[in-house]
Each structure stands twice: as C-alpha cells, then as structure tokens.
Amino acid sequence: MSAHEFGNKDRYLAMLDHFDVMHETHLSESSRSAFGTLNNIKYALWCNNPHISAGSFDTQAATDLNRFLLLCIEHEVETVILFIDSAGVSLKDPQNGMAGVAQAIKLIHRLNMRPGCKTVSVIGETRGCFGGALLIAGACQYQIAHPCALIGVSGPQVIESITGESRQGHMAIYTAAYRLSTGEVSHLLTDQCLLNQVAILPTRRLDFSFLCSLIDALPGQGACNRSSSGFDNEPISLGDLKETAAGLLHAQAGVLYLKGNAEQPFSFENERNGFSRYLKALAATLRYRVETGLQVDISVTAQGSGATFIAFSMMGSHLRIAPEAQVRALPQVAVDRIVPARTGAQ
Image (cartoon, rainbow, N blue to C red; front, top):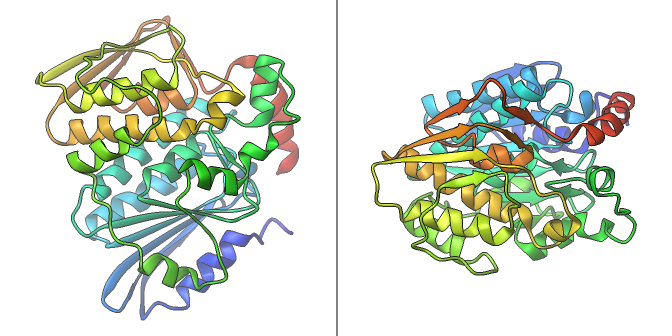
C-alpha cells in the first residue's frame, strides 16, 4: 500500500460521501479533516496518515489535531470521529509530542462534558494504536478498532528493549480482540456501514456518575476516600492508579498540590491486565475535576516518562517542571532501538 493509501483514509472518505452538506475541509501532509452535516447533525472527522513517521504525534500532527478539536468546540459539533492509526508520540520530537497529546486529551474531555456531544475513535490497522495515541483514542467515548489492529500502551518492542523479556508469547495481548475483552476498545469494525455503527451509539457524558462507574469497573482494590499526594518515583501499580483516580474524584479540597514524578511501568503483565483503562480513568478524572473548578497543581522535581506521565502529570491545572528534572517519552535504551525502525517505516 502506498503512502497515499490506507484503510482509515478509505473509511474517512466513505463517510464524507454520506454528508448532506460539506462545510469545510483541511489537508496537511500528516492529516486531513472535514466538517459537515447529516440529517441536521453536525459531524467532524479527523484522520492521520500512518505512513508519515509511523503516524506518530509530533509538533505538526498534534497541532493539526488540536486546531481541529478547538473548531469542534467552537462550532458545537455533535459527533466527533477521530480516525487514528499511530505508533504514539514522536521520539524525534518527544516534548512537543507529549504536550500536544496532553492538550488533545484535555480538549476531548471538554467535548465529552458537553450534553449531546459524542466522541468516537476509529483505530486503523496499518500502525495500530500505541502510547499517547491510545490515550487520545481512549479519551473518546467509544473506540472502534479494525480486527487486525495492534493496540497497547507500551509496545512489545519497547517492553522487550527495557526489560529484556522476549515479546514471543505475548503478542496475542496486543490484538484488537484481546483489547475488546479487556474493555480497552468498545467495538470492532464490522461489514456494517461505519456511519450507521456510530449513529446508533448513545452519548456518554463525562460527569461524576460516569467516572464513579468507570473507576469502580476497574479490577483490583481501590479506596474511594483515599487522598492522593501524587507519585514520587516509586513503582506504580494498576491498583495505585485506580486508588489515585478514586481519591481525586472524591477530594474535598479546593486546591491540590501533587507530586508528578510519574514513571511509566513497562511490563507485559500490565498490558495483559488492561493498563490503558486505568490511565483513561485517571486522566478523565483529573480533567473533570479541573474543568469543574478544582485547582490541581502538579510539580515534577526528578523525572517522569511515558503515557503514565501524560495521563497524570500533564492533566492538572498547572504543571511545574524543575530545571533539573528529566521528562522523557521513553527510556533511552528503547529510543535507540525504535527510532531507526520508525525512520525506515516512512
């Protein structure tokens, strides 16, 4: 398949054909978007190109997406569909990539809080959906994945590079079918018209009740009245993520000062246990509390990395990073192995 052809592009264009009115379209090297109406419902579509830098989010891709999302808010779009096919945050432009992904998550949750607004991600099969891209897809109310898509927070090559554990025997946990079983995607693509598949989905407004259900559904123990001080470079378990989300949801203070030294826990076990669901709940809870008036100041004094850092440390009202602190998309050993591979994929 050429750099101009990929599955999500075909789905995007097929959906455009159904619009009654096309209001405006945008096109760049890394993405395309369109706004239109169908049956008096306002739709907005955005689609990234998985053949450009493996679809990773760098300054350009993140800027394109966030401009699109701001227009969705401005024009009060009722159905927002993101066609995502991406290896994650750009490892050549990690700081801007992480910041751009964080901003996209914030804007998606702002849309999720609006009555009557539906957000849907469609995960493609060329690169799949990893890292920060999965955080964006997961922030949407629904995730519809191609059956052949590979999906995960930390990719198998990343975990193998960092831990030394072979990826062999673990690839099944990255399949769309497996992620459907863990609840990390809500649906698989079918032969049914995608527009019809999206149209029948009810809206899931981001509010207190929704977050209670989201957190309670996570496996493991979680004390709903546990206060949180954040993370300070200690190992972070899935239970810690659940308890932190619950504590933030029920916090009574007007201002919270949290430690943001959140390091990504890279392991096949976390991937097997639905890691992205915990990050989704944590990010959604933080954004809901901030958007409804809680001031959350997060300070990074040592280091932070990965999707965990984005989902927690970058979701507050204010983020302060000390000059000596090190914030990375991935540990260097993984970057050294993956950047050449992504470059070769262009």
